Image (tube, rainbow, N blue to C red; front, top):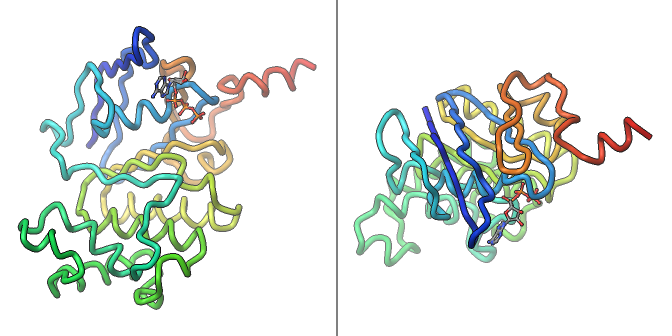
Amino acid sequence: MLTATGLTVHYGHREVLHQVDVGVGSGELLAVLGANGSGKSTLLRATAGLVPADGEVTIDGRHRGPLDIALVFQRIHLVGRRSALDNVCTGALGRLPLHRSLTPALFPREVREEAMGCLERVGLADRAHDRADGLSGGQQQRVAIARALCQRAPVVLADEPVSALDPAAAEQVLELLAELAHTEGLAVLAVLHQPDLARRHADRVVGLRDGAVVLDGPPDQPVDSLYPHALLETTS
Ligand SMILES: Nc1ncnc2c1ncn2[C@@H]1O[C@H](COP(=O)(O)OP(=O)(O)OP(=O)(O)O)[C@@H](O)[C@H]1O
């Protein structure tokens, strides 16, 4: 279980996240929704320790450790000229001894086997030896998710993981994240711009407005109030 309590972030003198409390259970996919600038990415980055924040983040009651959180981004950071399998192996770098991590071309056999298992879980074992840049955007995002699995982190944070994908690939990636949460017992938090996807795949939805949580509940609750343009459309 991931628990963030009282998260507060300042950029300069501006407070952009105000005392946010968010919990994600093991086996749960939580979608974070909100308009542009509402603080979604800041919440994700503060939870991951990528920006300084007041408050506390614990995982199963312990302070967050450096390998506890795996990250998946909208811009998929794979090494294009390396194989899908090599990219997944890099998820294990954090737990390899230093001399092994300096020569990532020579990943130990057990890591390669584990990485292959991760590719199987995302349905891409047959593309393991293809160059990453020869895969479609949706397939590359699934490789990035396999890499997160290979990190063995109990928590996955995904920042707009499907914003660069076509609707079918987006659906597939969200389905995969939900399935991994449910079958692997991962706590998955995904920042999304598509309330429909959240409704179909998330177990729970948190809504942010102006850096504060204004909604937390089941995925089928109305979320129009999070989006100023939706208000304009309904009142015009
Ligand atoms: N590095 C930064 N320096 C200063 N201000 C920032 C920085 N990053 C974000 N902000 C500000 O913090 C607020 C929240 O931004 P954030 O990116 O978290 O929102 P978001 O909900 O993820 O937006 P979007 O949907 O557009 O990605 C915004 O007002 C933004 O301008």
